[in-house]
Image (tube, rainbow, N blue to C red; front, side, top):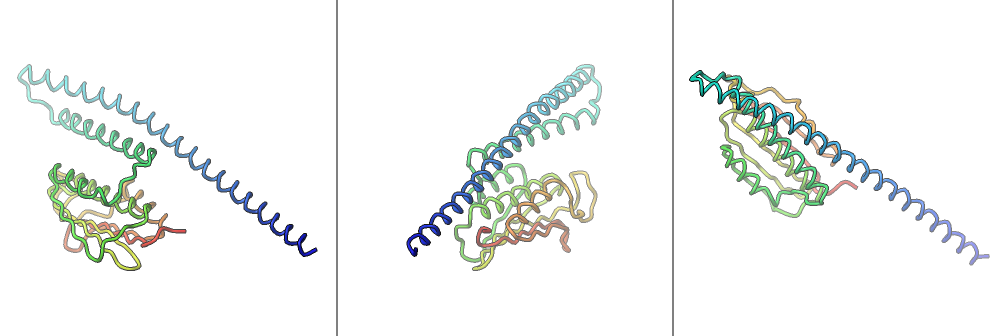
Length: 241
């Protein structure tokens, strides 16, 4: 009887483990299908929007060329359309490349921070990086989230801060990790007047908040008392269970 009871317990445990494994497999399959669908939509949007934007840029370019050929002054609106169209096309390519890198498992992390800073400086944004505490390997989820936060924050500085410089501060403590990006910009764009930028509600900040919330961290984003803007994310030292 004792042997039979023990065998029954082992059988029940095996059935439970199989059920749990089947549930995990189902969840993984659903996540994979959702990712594939997002990538399909991203590709379709990229192709259609890039084509439309390219047509707009070409038409604006032709109109500007004809105006110059006739000796007329090119309307500022045409030049603005050309510039905005080119920037939109670049952003679309960047967004799709990020999605594809995630799909291929080539996730970015703080190990690529130097190249990110170099690209920002190449675009005319001075950036300084400081580190406090003892650097250590972070969980992949935390590492990638920190990189994406710095990437988005520097992108926002370039878009909205006008003439500005930025600083990136990484802080390692035994129980946590934080990343902070400050800038000394004074406006919401290249043509904005003086005064602090209001706390933004764009998709970039929404994406940051979602990343941080998934990890159980906290995000602050808003104007600094001394002027400019600050993004600070406090992240756990360990990945969530």
